[in-house]
Image (cartoon, rainbow, N blue to C red):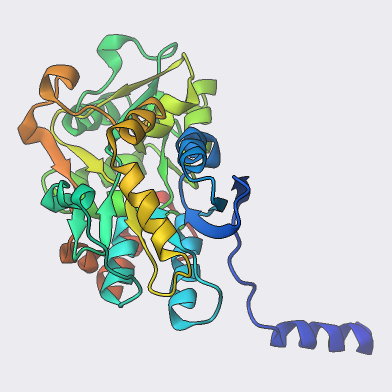
Length: 346
């Protein structure tokens, strides 16, 4: 190795780690007031909602950045410290991270008639608000699994793994919780249901289930037949994939229900515009658009067949801070890693 190469390698080693970056960016409107929104929600899914808000607010020029949940969390922490220009609004599915940010004084309060109508589980300290209704589902390939083969609960899924391990070997997928803040939230929530969590991970280990990064990849794998079943994926992404070969089940033992968290950062420059967006998202018109986008699901028992007692709303509350406890987080990541035979734990 030449001296020049060694010098270059040493110089690179001294550089600070690369900051997390957004996955995609879109612009809405052409007004004089610049507003920056960062979100984990795919632009393709939420576009009609932001377009309508932009049409109603022609004074705004909205930059919408799409991020992965963990990267967005790290960026938001840095912004809160003053290390960069803060977003004006943040919308994330990894609500345990949002609760952490609020608890760390990274948000500013807001109150309106619209926010006052939210259920207690969907708001916290007038600084964090849940604006969607999205169940975590079991997705399956309609071509390759007949109706009587589709598990309708975790108990039925466990039975299927025990009785037909070769059928499901490497053909069950779920989120990689080390990479996905949403996946970690679902796994943590599952871990509180002591009756099935350990057995389910043991079953996944036996059939060499696959942990991978993101909803789109998992659902595409189900549609193509690479996976027969996807466990604990957001129903909104299944619906938006519009894959005729992919069906979904709301597990009847319990179904986790997520409400994406909206926050106005403490250092937001356009807090008023962010508040306008929040109030809009809670209107009947916006909720209808969110429903069309698959981000607001009717959870009435008469519509879904899911008993009220089986619905598990993930509350926006300090209880989610436990999910960010370093010791508990490390334990769950190690347990998960052992199950999916990953080599490293971040």
